[in-house]
Length: 162
Length: 284
Image (cartoon, rainbow over all chains, first blue to last red; front, top):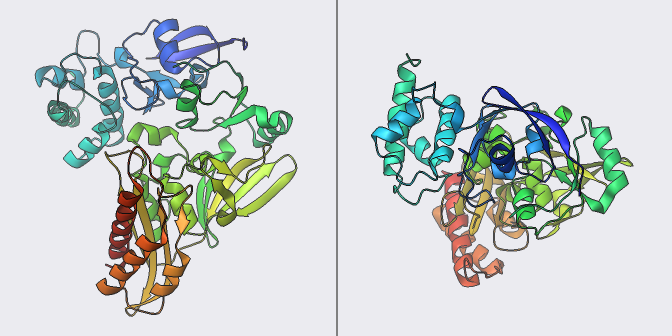
């Protein structure tokens, strides 16, 4: 067995000391070693996007990155979105607009949209649809996810959370 | 769906990476963006004993333009081309093509050079590099060599790179303001692999085509440059009649592969239409 790496992972601003084999994907390390099970694992080959997290502010498939590669990076997961009991505008908009049903794909969609809106807060509808085509949802038919992201974008542009 | 065990190195410099490659050769794989390699490892279709992760080698992360053209380092991500990396038609073409590559999160990790090294016949960058006369710079502990793109691809997932070589840079010749380009791709869904695609670049002066580049991808074990059809285009007007003729001849000149996604006949029809649309865009 390949030797383990002892590294510190910074997830949602908090340091996690983990001892991991290099073959462990970031998705598995987040769930099993950091105890952050909000990141869901669907296809494990980069197609479904359920495991999307932000690495240095960019949305990436955490099943297509190894945990060791996240050393000295800032990882953000769905657990870091809300501010205490106050939902992030994206979470609020998903809730209010029926942007989810079973919820399995939701953490991936939230992190995808969060990263994309940070890069471009003024996405057009076409751009929102293009970005959201990255991930799969089998419940909603996508229309309400598009709507939720559009509404959250407006809320985010209106100013920082109170 | 979990990768087999491997040893992992993350060198901080190119020379360290080349020393590791020289030592482990066929036992190791380079890990850049990992957007093709890691899925293959998750499926255990790929089981490299050693991974050399080049993501910490900052000296490989660059795009710069000079009078010789565009130079793209091994670590440049697809997403770097969302914005135009160079003024003029070449930067616009890169930007347009980048948006067809997989999806937004994949483009944040996957690299331009990695696409070429992976040599997937459905790769947009392989088509672009083939059509626009790219040169690949391979580096090893033994030195470096330049490989013309026409000599680089050996077939599906196969290149001219030696086991101790790293694809360090890709170079594209400059494209002046007189050039116009077009790209068209058929895929089942946004972000899917191309069933057929075409890329065209024309330099038109006073209504006459002075230079032409035309390539198709997704139909063979590698992208194909249609040089004979380029010659047909030069010297005349890029009229609708000429474009229709070229598209018909493209249809006749390719022998597409059939697979679960499309029959050879269907692919051939797609390629002809892709050629027509790419040329129409370039001639507009």
